[in-house]
Amino acid sequence: MPSLDDLKKRISSVKSTQKITKAMKMVAAAKLRRAQENAERGRPYSEKMNNIILNLSGGISDKESAPKLLIGTGEEKIHLCIVMTSDRGLCGGFNSNIIKKAKSYFKKILDDNKTLKIITVGSKGYDQLKRTYKDYIIEKISFKESKNINYFDADKVGKIIIDRFKEKEFDVCAIFYNQFKNVITQIPQEQQIIPLKASEEKKDSSSEDNYEFEPEEDEILSNLLPKNISTQIFKAMLENSASEQGSRMTAMDNATRNAGEMVDKLTIQYNRSRQAAITKELIEIISGAESL
Amino acid sequence: MSNSFKLDIVNPEKSFLSKEDVTEVIVPAFEGDMGFLKDHISIISFLKPGLLKVIDATAAEETYYVEDGIIEFKNNCLSVLTSNIFDIKKMDKNKVKDILTEAEKDSKNNGISDQAKYLVDQKIEVLKSLTLN
Image 1 (cartoon, each protein chain N blue to C red):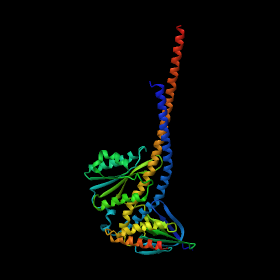
Image 2 (cartoon, rainbow over the protein chains, first blue to last red):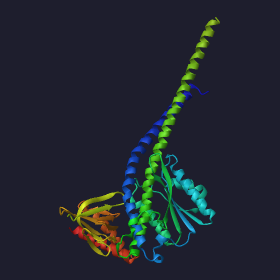
Image 3 (cartoon, helix red, strand yellow):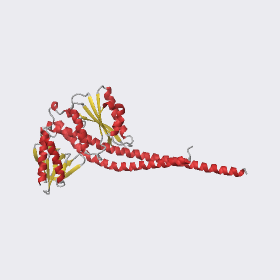
Image 4 (cartoon, rainbow over the protein chains, first blue to last red):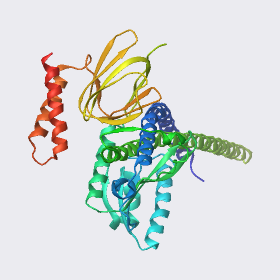
């Protein structure tokens, strides 16, 4: 049985923890709104980019000479995985969900006897992956210093990927990130960016439109595809940041609630033992008086 | 019948400009400046550094400086996707100079490809004309 003093200390410590989690929740809620707005504002760009690329790739007559970024190297031996996580912790299952998704993908690749290379974006992903996959990580990138997500950071990552692709360091590239659905739900995503998967080709029925191209399709495509990679990375970063804040908000909300429950429980315990101590003292006095 | 069409300029962060009533847009396309009027044929092209002019129904003219981008014209809607665009009225002289010195440094670097060199030279030319005004 802990003494009254100990209980008192525990109650106040839980209370101060609760204050912290509550503050973090508030901060996350405020940041979430901004991140969500950013994610929504960023969507038209990536959608338009996607549309143009679909239109372009539909117009390419000679598939053989199409840029490698679009059709791939023709092999599938070396896989590069970009795992995008946050730089900060205390955001519930946010990072673990991405890692879990990525790990199952890694396992599949290694089981197929293919080569695996990993680039981590965000320090938490590196921390979690370094235990099991340290040898596969070829680069770790972190944007701890930049306050806001900006396109230049995404462009940097994009350039790294493209440079490595030009050096023929990998055949297939996939990115892992959390897609923001709503505050409670974030869906870990796996998206292949090289070669480009034209999954939405059916949707775009207007691709039969005859476009004029100036300069030639190939030239535009080879100019556009690297940009598309950066755009996809940027989109993933935006979705990720909204997801991170959402996930942190729910996690901190739960923590605040749990702390509240704990304070209630501890207070009851404290009051009971205080009552018991008083009763004990009274009994001692009474039995002392009786014996006289 | 009105002869205006829709213009959308988006950059990765946000939608930069959206106008329903532009009558003419002049863009610095890679192979030379290109003017767009209503009912232009569907076209996709990309941009070199230069000035993008927008003229709306009231004949008001706005000029923007763009560094790169892709344009698509389709069904009387012109979409401009660019990562670097500035309103020249809001551009401050020092900033122009900063970009200019950066570009001049790039241009002296011999390791770059001919195409990159061409783009950088274009950029310098445009920026110089901006600082003169």
